[in-house]
Image 1 (tube, rainbow, N blue to C red):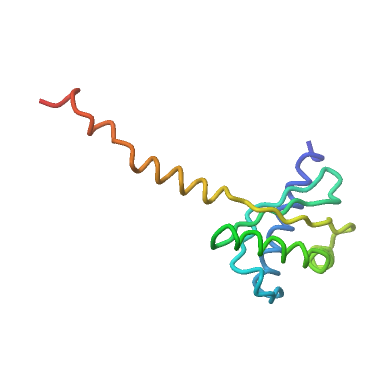
Image 2: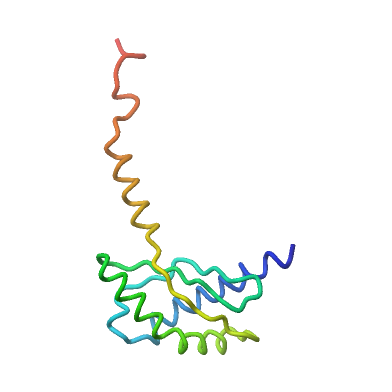
Length: 124
């Protein structure tokens, strides 16, 4: 049980540290308005998939993720030192479109007729 919990616990620490580093240490304008949404660590804690949401269009996503992947070695070193990890995970940044999908689904649901508006039952 502990073996399954450990990657999630370390991933949460890494996510918080990466979010802090983006706010305070990364000054590359190509990163843009990037937000770390999730970190998924391998079971051996040696590699991490870092999911990023970016404010802007598709071009902004590609530009930000590319800039973050260029900065990954520097960020890896900082995460390892600041989180006191024996092995700093190799970071691979990826686009996270879940917020956009969620907003799109919400928009679709908003335009569906409400069951009370369909008439018939209960109205006289």
